Amino acid sequence: MNLGDRMYQIVSSLSREAKRLILLSLDVALVPIALLAAFILQNNGLPEGVSLLNHWAGLPLLMMIAALLVLVTGIHRVQLKAYESRAIMMTGLHALLLGLSTAILDDMAGYGTPLATFINFVLVYFLMSVAGRVLMLQLLLSIYRRGQKQSRVLIYGAGATGRQLVAALRTDDGIQPVAFVDDNPAIQSTMVRGLNVYSPVAIDALIKSREIDRVLLAMPGLSRPKLAQLSRRFEDMGLDVQALPSFAQLTGQEQLVDQLAPVAPGKFLGRAPLDAELPGGSDTYAGRHILISGAGGSIGSELCRQVLACNPARIVLLDVSELALYTIDMELRGLLKKRKIEIVPVLGSVTDAGLVARTLAAQKVEIVLHAAAYKHVPMVERNAVVGMSNNVLGTQVLAQAAVEAGVARFTLISTDKAVRPKNMMGASKRMAEMVIQDLASRRGQKGGGETLFSMVRFGNVMGSSGSVIPLFNAQIEKGGPVTVTHRDVTRYFMTIPEAARLVLAAGSFATGGDVFVLDMGEPVAIYDLARQMITAAGYAVRDEANPQGDIEIKITKLRPGEKVHEELLIGEGLTTTPHPKVMLERADHLSEIEIAAALKALRTAIAAADETALRAVVARWVEGGETFVVPSGDVGQP
Image (tube, rainbow, N blue to C red; front, side, top):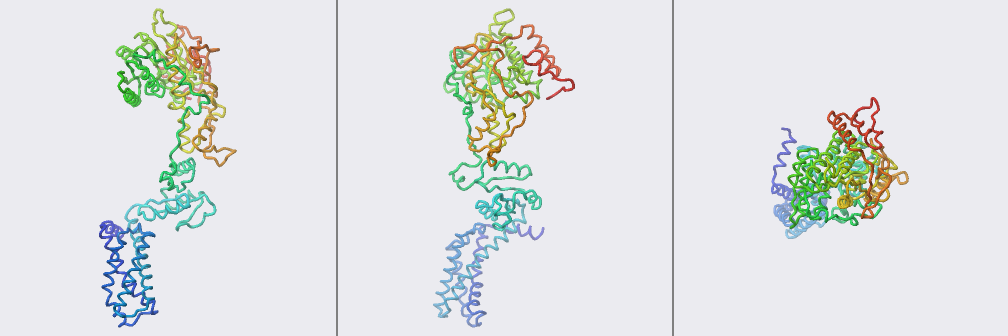
């Protein structure tokens, strides 16, 4: 064990009382040294031996008085790392009282020492006491730093906050401030609090040459996006990054920099929300046994809440995700209050024919709301076999089981991406629609059933998982950039409550094979939506017109299968329903034989995990499907 380690063990093992005793001893030991220095200053050299002995005869009494004054003022209780202006004033008071005591004792002894000697004594004692504590602190910090690993810190921002931060960090034995970095050219190449101030261009060299492992951002006035951008830059270098809030933020006078104002999705519809205007269909669902597939998803969970308000007898929750199922199950039970509505959670997939048949029979299901689907375009595009299996064959399994179980109503939740689709997700939803249209056409016929089938075609649902609103919020929270795939891309939008209400309304309007569409007004430009969200969050868009803005909008490129503009209709027009904002499309569909052939080819392609064959099925049977033909030599994932 070297000397540094031995000193660290000794110092770290000292008790608080022992440390106070050392400080008390220092103040007492300085009395004779300061007294001697005062005589030397007064006489410009050592006084005569006899005179010095006469004055020092009362030294033990003076040292006792010094100890007593230390105990009364409590200076020895002030920790070295907390020794600051108030403690220095206490030391000054102690020195003054000690000098006054010395003068009184001298007068009582009749030595007639000049007043200047006592003034010198007070000043010397005060300076030596303060200097002694400062030297002891530096010695202790040196010992502690040798005894443990230190974090070497670069401080970004040499303003008032940065200067206060350095002063505080120098009392911490585990942290060593190394240098400042600041954007202000006026203070670059200067020294602040003993540290050099560098330009941001020198950061890379500083990190390597000074072995920095942490960066503290001491700029509480900087906007949050710029703080996030700096943080990402340093994190990419492998450094720990922390941002220091201002004192106003700490006391609650301002919001902390990491608090992003939430943005209500419905704010950007460009029209008045319609959920309050849509009928809830309470009579259709009251007292019934209702199964909701995909119950834990964004749309499914909102359907559960609104169906619960219709007072059904039983709600069967079907979901393949255990966490999602548990979450919605617990939420609904909390909303029940004193109502006697049975809630039955079922964990499983709609592709499991046995599970589906047993559930429908055991729970005596009368209405099915089918929201289960893989809906994220890029994910289904890259996992087309699984997506098609779940969205098409899962719908066919659930719908056929509903017919066999005598379910009264079946509503499929579809999407505007099913209209002349350009991606596999949209194609899967269109084929699911075709399955439902086929079963609806056979209602009341041999091999059919009495189930009333209908479909609801949504636009983009604001706030649902994977939708653009949560994505933009997350990008804004990180400081940008906000990514838009195309400058002119537009989408139809609706809120989650609107989507759920539309499903319930469709269930009450349905006559069989219907496709319901909500009047969603004009499509919304995604680029404009991004600008609105940045502004609504309290930031400025950074572009050519405003290069000093907070967050930029970055145009990437259209993803595989993505359209610039979506459509809502396959047919030529719409007919009205009992509600003016709900429209009805009655489009042509494939015959029973054609659907059977399409599903057979689809099952064969899925069983072989053959994406080329899968795309060929879509190209053959789906409107606009010719874009899905895979060119020779271009087989596989997009």
